[in-house]
Length: 271
Image (tube, rainbow, N blue to C red; front, side, top):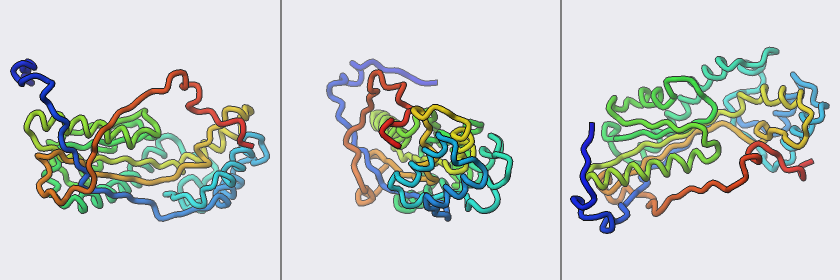
C-alpha cells in the first residue's frame, strides 16, 4: 500500500534540492589463492589441447594481457575444477553459494565496521552478480550471515555485466534520495561478488572446440574472484558527520548506440 500527493501539495518540484549522499564505509575481500598466467596455462594444458587455434590464442592473451596474478577460490591443483569432468551448473552454483557468500560477508563486515553503525540500522541492501541465476539470490544468504533485520528492503541486480558496481551505486543513490524526500533515513549496504575462475574449465573447453578467432571469449584470460561492499547514507542516516568518507555528487548512465554486437567480441589486433 502507499499514498500519493500532488506536486502542488509538495510545493512544486522546482524547489527540491539534490540531497546529501555519503559513502561511510568501504570493504573488499579476496580469496586466498593468487595465480600467475603460467599457472592458468598449466591448468589448461592438463585437460585441454592447447594447440587448438582459439584456445592457443586465448592462452597467449593470458600471458600478454599485463596481469601478473589473479585471485582465485581454486588452488588449481586439487578439488573443484580439477577432475576430468567439467563442473556442472549445479556444482558452480553450490560453489558460489559457499565461497562467494563467504567472501561477500567478509567484505560487508569490513564496510560496516568502517561505517561504525549498528547492523540493525541498515535499511536496505542492494546486491549485484552476473554468474549465479538460482533463487533465492545470494543477497538473502549474505543478509542472514550478517544477522540483518528481516524487514531490510533488498534489491538484487543481474544482467548488467561489468557495469554492476556502478549500477548498485546509482540505484542506492536513487533510493537514498527518495528516502530524503520522504523524511526518512537511508543506510544502504551495497555489495557485489564475482567468482570467475571456477568457470575456466568451461571457457577452455569452449575455446578448444571453437574455430572463430574473431569472436573469442576473453573472460578466462582476464577475470578473477573477489567481493566488495560499501555503505551509503543520506543526511538523515548520517548519525555522525565525521563518518562520511566520500560524497556522491552525481550519477548517470548511457547506452552507446549500435554497440551490442561488440559485447563479446575480441579485438582483431590481439594475436
